[in-house]
Image (tube, rainbow, N blue to C red; front, side, top):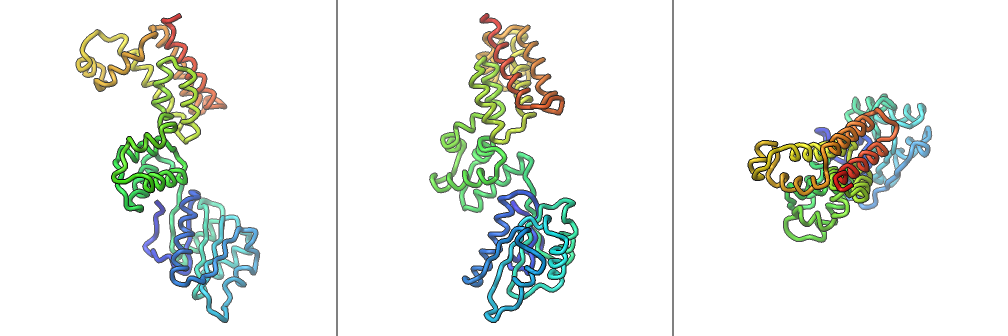
Length: 328
């Protein structure tokens, strides 16, 4: 979801796409190129890296043509331009050529900030392409993708897709496109599960469930999937902690109906039934060992260790062994 300035004309003389999210940067460029080609199918597009834009090159590309052709000049990683080339670009910003659209893709930040400030001061159209680091941002991205394609997706389906795919926006966009192409009607969580079951099951809670059930190999496999699809290690330690604590709470609670225990322990009734199945094989000592393992893993992923992945693997194996303590 690239955000744009009030000047939202893709054929503005200068567009700056600012951020480090490659998919959004590419889309910002594609939007300008598409608008230019819609205005003139013979538009000449030049897509350049910093080393290709030497001092004097921009002047050559933007000089008047006998045929007055429309042209789009794209400069990737503009923050890496040489000082002399930056001078050329700044000079151009003060008097952009007609029928030419300049697109500067800039990472933002301190490097090359002078060029970015100059473009903003000159009134350039700006498209924000920042990394989406929060789950809520990726969820919003997925919802927008479905809306853009004119399709309806249940909220649970959007969440399931984010849980399954992780943080890669290209993969999320590709998954949305595939679902829209293959599925008729409203897209629900069941459909997402059928398409992406191998990855959807790799959520942090899947790791925790397999670990507290004593299924070490499956827990480790789910853990590796989770990490590879962008699940934050701290979410996994949180899920492990919740799983082990639920075992401890239920094992020390008095017997009773699920509804009564749910009120007493602050869990939904369905979870009481699940934890009852998971707690077979657990002992009080096993719970204590597992809680220590979770605490160590939590410290490891929050900076107390050199290898967060190893800390999580160690915790998962320890918890799985503790889950079998009553069985020997």
